[in-house]
Length: 158
Image (cartoon, rainbow, N blue to C red; front, side):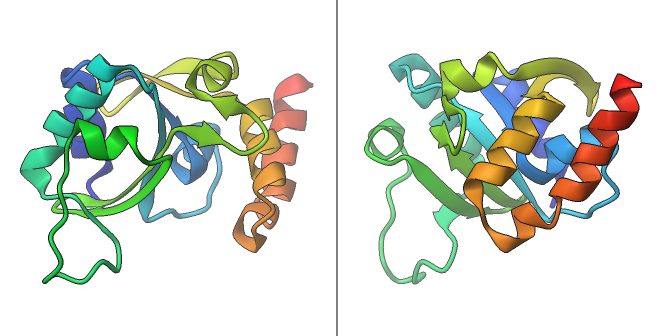
């Protein structure tokens, strides 16, 4: 996964997005390895257009989608979905319009901070928001990350 390239492309295209998931956890000091970029994105028409245009050169397709079945990547596709698990030329990117335990983009924004990463200023979930989202998602991989994330939060609060 080319995290730097993906984040730079989205940032440079003025896409409104917040990094969530494993990459957000690494920003807070997690030692876990992640292989995809998870983002929450704003659903305004302008943002959907910018997001579709930014990722188009990297040939996004749903992961596991048969290669012989046509897939149209555009603003309309983004408007009609809530979660996209994409395979692109720069790696796996998951796009979420809503985050479990937090809500939509504006709600997630209230639980975000700005960090310097990949030569850009980007929004990412704050540590309490990340913990809340992982707990609400309830998947084994999310729940197994909670001990480390809660320890990082405790250390930060001391």
